Length: 230
Image (cartoon, rainbow, N blue to C red; front, side):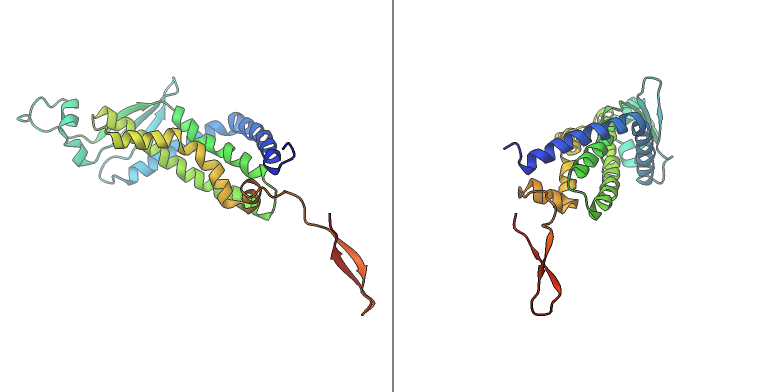
């Protein structure tokens, strides 16, 4: 029915989503993308200490130009060697250290969209002292998730360029770009906010506690309190 707790939560969620999306698009979109680029480049550099660090720059058309350090085992693959100019097995091997790849920022923007989606879901729940803690913890978790998803996206494009794609990687990239960014924010809010679980899953009303009203205590002459029925 119209007055059900879930319906009221949905209405509040849509209102908060309009607010957080406006905040994200006007003020946070570019800073979040810049932070995601830097964090992902740092994470990729840590995975290959013997190669030059990974780097990324933004081209005039908005594409991200990555320079990815390749592990030696991947650089020695026949497909990679041919791509870098080795004509035959008799030729001297080519030392491959860096692979350049241009990637659209569409998926990266989607990974940062998880922030306003999560904020709207959390703020639509009844507010309590847990709300601020949940917002901070959830945002930190989404930041780490965004870096992980961007690494998967970069690896998918790199694998396609060096002809190492396979069905498993295709499936992982599908979930990373089309499933996880949409499911994680509401599920994370449900995990962090007990009041939200109470409303959405159990269907209990999001009402304040029942007030206490005074009553007389004949034994000691002092006032006491009892709960009044609604």
